[in-house]
Image (tube, rainbow, N blue to C red):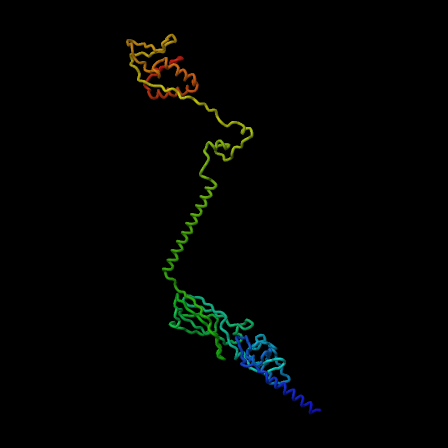
Length: 417
C-alpha cells in the first residue's frame, strides 16, 4: 500500500515538473530606473503559448533575508497575474542604499514557469536624472545659472540621497556653426553658478549634466539655454533713448492738446451753435433782451393780432428848381378867382415880359390845376410831412437863397426864390 502511494506521488510530481518545463520562463529581465523610479521589464515568446493567455507574477525580497531558512522566507508580491511585460516597483519604496532580489515567472492555465531572479541595488544600478530646470540671468558682463536638483518619486531632492552629486556645465558663444565655437567646462555642486570672463553684449548658450562619481553615474545634458550678457551702455544709445523719449513725450502732449481742443470745440458747437437768433426776434420771444427765458403766451394774448397798421402813401410830385430872376423883377403873386383865364399876372417896375422863376409842370395854370388838386385831394395828410422834408433839402442845397412864403389856393402852388 505504501509502495503504491509513493508511486502515485512520484508520478504526480514528475507530471507537474514536465508541465512546468514545457512553459518557457521570461527572458532578458532588466531594470529601467531614473532616480527613485524603478520598473522591472522582461520579454517572453508568445508563440510558445499559442492561443492561451499568459500572465506574469513579480516578487521581491531584501537580499540579506535569503540567508534565512526557506521556510521562513517571505517574498513580497508586487505584480500578480498581470498580462503586461513589466512591473512598476516605485510604490514598493525600496530603500535607495539597500540590495534586493527580484524574480518573475510566467503563468498559463494553472501551470507556472521557473522563476527568473535579478539582483538590484538602487544606489549602484539606478540612473540619475538631469536637472529639473535650468534658468539663465545676465549679471553685467557675466552670466548667472540657476539649477534645480533632480527630484525623487516623492518630489524631494536627489542630493538628500546622493550628497556628492554635482553638475557639469558646458557653455559656448552662440553662433550658427557650433563646431567653430570653443566649448568651455565648469563643474560645481552649487545650485547658482556664475560664469566669469564673458564678452559684454554677447549671446552664450549653456547645457548642464548631473554627475555622481562613486558609481560613475551621469545624466544626459539638458537642452541648450541661451542668454545675452550685458555691459556698459554706449553713449550713443543713451542719447538715442533720451531724444526718443523727448519726441514721444512731445507727441503725446501734442495729441492730448489737440484732443482737448477738438472736444471743447465740439461741445461748444453742440451747446452754443454759431447760428443765433436775430436781436429783434430775441426781444420779441424773450421777456427781456438779455434773458434766455422765453415769453409765455397766454390764451388772451394768442387771440390778439400781433401786427402794426401799415399806411400806403402815393409818390409826391417832383418840384423843379430854376435860377432866380433878376433883381429888377418883382415876385409875382397868385391871382384871385376873378382871373378867369387862369394865367399869372406879372408886375414889374419897367418890364413887360419875364419869367417868374417857377413854372408849373404843365406850362399853364389851367392844365396844372387838376393834377395838383387831385394829388392834394388824394393824399394831403400823407405827404405833407414829406413835402416839408423836401423843402428842408432845398434850403440845404441853396442856403444863400431866400425863401418866400408859399401862397396856395385851390388851383396852383408857387414858390419864389
